[in-house]
Length: 151
Length: 151
Length: 151
Length: 151
Image (tube, rainbow over the protein chains, first blue to last red):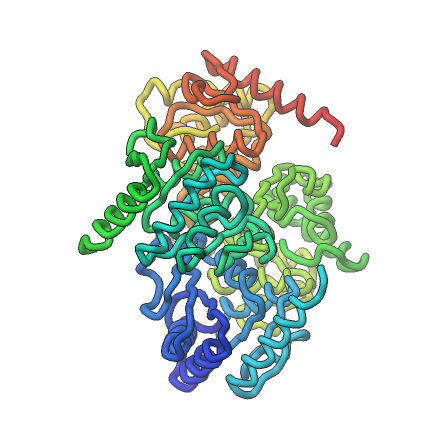
């Protein structure tokens, strides 16, 4: 789950719904651990009884939002984006700015399935979704398909 | 929990006991996710019903040992050591070689409590422990003390 | 200087011209150290008597192309992109794919001047240039302006 | 070249002499770019007409000491130590504390020749040297031997 660290209420609501759906499906929510879309999604996942991981860019556990269960403290600045992406079996991208774009681009580069929920669908390879539940369904299906393939 | 990726049975047994005690205390076990001490500790934690996090140096989820619940895929090589250390509230160090030494040194440098279980106690600042349960008790107490301090 | 690690001859020629112009201006060329645009630019800079730095993603000095003078060996995978960007006073971006896009996005996010040479100009904040010399002139001027500002 | 970021004058003098000898041999000095041993060595190298590289942990070019020619801005915190080590063909270690120890340990782990100048010689694998010129001679000889080996 990637998106803006500062976002308007309608986007936060969608992020919250994504978090709920991820948890409802029994999956772990991984995000960048900060505010905005990250916080809303973590709150949604926790409200639905799920487990949340926040991979924060700074040097402190306290940098994570209060809905993160497991904080990975990287102190890597923007280089932590690559770890958020690499640690995900599939990504759901909400609207964001250039930080989010760098994550979407890395996901596409690394061959990780990227679902765009109302955003980023102009980029080749992004799987479009119109609603949070649909985004989560796409993400989980792609993730499973990849992991079912013999390596 | 840090230590060698390849270790003799008596060390693995101690690591297993550390993992069990961490989980019994309700704490999350964070390790480097590979074999040896890391795998034994993760197995111990899982056997005791705990949650395990493995922060692996390579680019694949499959690099983690089978007892890791949450895999953080860094693709950072040895630079991932800094994240293992930074993400821990306290460290328990078992015998290891230079990779482990680099983690112990970083922990001391960053001000993270480091408990040495039969190892590293010649380094100033390492808290000595003779048995796994004692090591875990020391680690949790130091972690609590730090987090109880107003920031 | 960022761009594709595999590129057609006309793009390589432009990258070569960028390298020459960077060196002619007395600036240091920083790139990702691999092939394609990175190699062409490094060759151009060296041919014009300049100094070249390659920040490679892998673990070996030999990963750098033969026109790199100073190899920074990161072993960070794609996370090295953030260092290429952060170490630059200004960036010149040639056509590329998602790896390059992640670098352009990070540059814009970090507030580093990004000049797009026949590419990326649809992204808000990218400074357009039509020719290599023009791109280098824009990049150096922006870099100077930033460094002339009292901090 | 690794060592403390804060050091007494006799250590700084030795670091300065190491920098001079590195430059006199035509080699590039790579260091962490900050103060103490790093600054003294960079000053020595520059005084002898050499080229200096500083790989800084923070997010700003200005973090580098004034004797660094090429600044690599990592914003990786202590994880940048792995890059300082990995980018070196051989390391010379002066006295330092736990940050330096983590670098020495990583160098030994990665198989990079580590010369200890009045320090670290209790660690197996560290090559002892009594004087700056001797340390540089050892370092360059080991580096050459490694690079002469067919890969």
